[in-house]
Length: 454
Image (cartoon, rainbow, N blue to C red; front, side, top):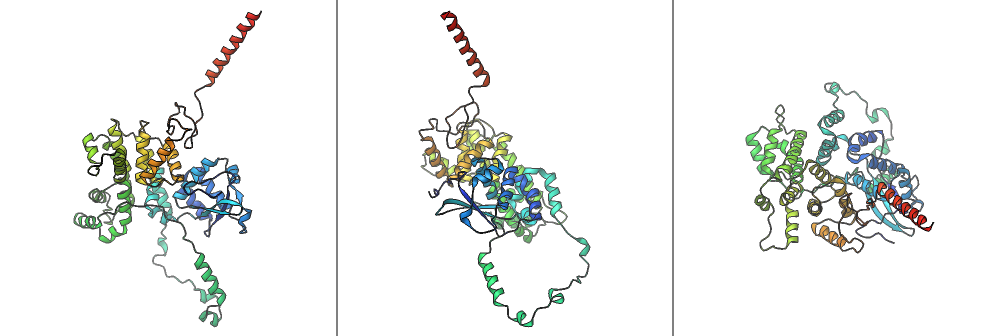
């Protein structure tokens, strides 16, 4: 049976096949441990390394193994595997493809080596996420560890021999490349793959870079060339944190490297992160009328669903969360702002879809929690939810399922709901103490019956 277009039908019997044209050597293992392990956790870390070991020596796809082999070795189930695998996909370590042949459907895992340290620290989303995970002190240690510069050879003369100084080739082969070499080179060119896919970062809008450049040149000693060098960083901070041009100019000034008169990229990211955290809490205390102003709607748009979609499309997650909490008379707690930031950083869902999820969860709960958001995000990602409209349809479909009379995800261990596709909840309403009391009552009733019979 073929895979559905919007849902991955993964079972333990589903086959898998691993491919790569990269190398996973000792240096790759060091990079994976130092830079990626804090981001993906130990289970995803183990999955990634195990898949490298499963790359076949001979290309015979009909001899593929099933996922049950992986699940058994890792001691995890299907849902755990999927939850961890998408972390590898989001960080560019893995791509997953669906295929089918005469034996049935199977998955192809294309493995990529970790980014080099330089590429990793220059990747805004990854470096900010790592900073958040391990803290400033450990982040600085790792940055220093991989920032290598060999000062001793700066003024030295290079006296190394070249290839033709040591080895000899025939003059004819040097002038006319042999056909075998040309054919082999062409084959590699046709099958060459990018070293690793870029982390998916899709800024919604671009900054007015000319405005930033003009004001920074007036206020600070930072050159336009240095601004251009950091343009991607500025755009990413704008799209992720919702920072506008004026605030970015202020942050650039407050984090400027006064010795080199340059933008300090790491300090810039740290200050942007701190302001993001502060804004979540401060926004929740803005008067209601201000919250309404931050969520413009089109004239004549009285449909609540249309208004919700407009707000989801026009607001950052931080501002949307603050508005939702304020509308209910609450405030944004540190734990939920951290949970939201982590989910957003991992790029599980587009920002407008993430906002719909915030709205949905807060309809039945007083706060956001990371496990519950991951449950919803995982379901929506597996079911191809990419827009606010998709998210609302998924919610509607779920609510109308006969086997789910309450029509909601379960977000509380104190509330027992019928098991659903989105949340498998055990019925824990009967505790061991309750069961013991019931048994004692039954024994007492039996004793009375025996006494009456006598």
